[in-house]
Length: 510
Figure (cartoon, rainbow, N blue to C red):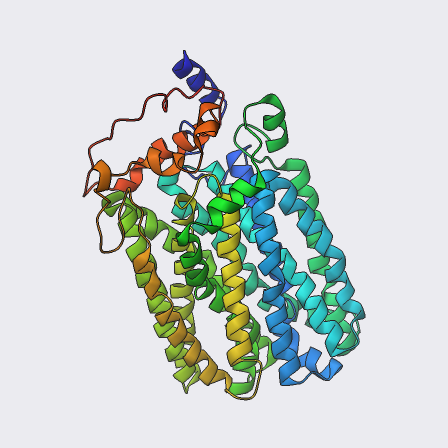
């Protein structure tokens, strides 16, 4: 009877789904509810926030003259822009776990819109730094983006889906390098505004985008395949979780902190580059502002394909080698990104600098996609908070590298790039210590202790006996069943006997 009910529920979806009603395929050109509509709203909202957070970067040569900014002011503003969302990403993770991604995403877009508009009234370096810090809060939409797609799509394609959603969102960092200089020139040429007025007016466009997207997410979005979290909790289909439990299982899982570090030197260096690359080409090779912006834009625009490529490579490696394949892909692409960053810092000609920048961007962005091909498997119960902590690691790494290498005159920008690349290579090594007892690690096979660990035992261990007696762990059991694909085809493991009662999941439980 449960199978019949599950089959009837599955028929209401436009895409084929698994037992959790997560989609098994990605249909890019579809906007149907719930899977594809949530997918598109997730990446577009993050894309919008990326545009506004880095909108000032391509206009720095104009802004610094208007506000009399020093190199230290510019560097501190860059640090502020990526540091603002360290805390907001943690909070967003908790909101996703306890309230749902829809409200978190929509309200953050709407709440930061007035801050974007306020750029027009900046009159000092302190105001500039403060506003960039507060706009940076909006980058927490990355967490809602990755959480949302993770609960909408099945584990076998999650690397590709998260890679596409995250990559297209990150692409806003490239689009803004083109958009803001374009708006600036249009306002000065056709609007008759002075340069010191035009850059301020240009920020109204990102501000309105925040409002439009925020309203769209509220009106059109849906938290889970079967409905919004609040409604599912009221109907009893989803149990309300406790923050203390979610927090405990996130911070006591050592893998959380390894990925915090790893993401700090994939997404972190990307965030840092978005702040310095246009000015670097403008000053080092004596280019025009628009030309420097176009070159800088290619770094962010590479996200259209590079981050999805990393996620897709992770999925492909998983089909043959399981989770161990995903870990190897992450190490390879992130290390290569660091090597090409070193090359960028040592480039002495424009053509070599552009080539190395593009290769660096592909490596770093593919590593971001590969990272979030693994994150959904670290924890089922604390997925939102772990996604938030990992995302915060990216901002922490971006702020740290900006502070160390690009906020003082101690290092030239070229030297800073070289040292940042070396740090990225070194800080990627810890991926080797990530071990899943049911699947293994880069160098070690699955655990054999006590007869071995199964997917069910790993994810059910996040619930105590009392919670299991109440059936609160059933969602984790379904996820465990669907995550057996991480065993890989090359090293097949005999299906373990499922503990009594674990498969007696009511058809209505998500």
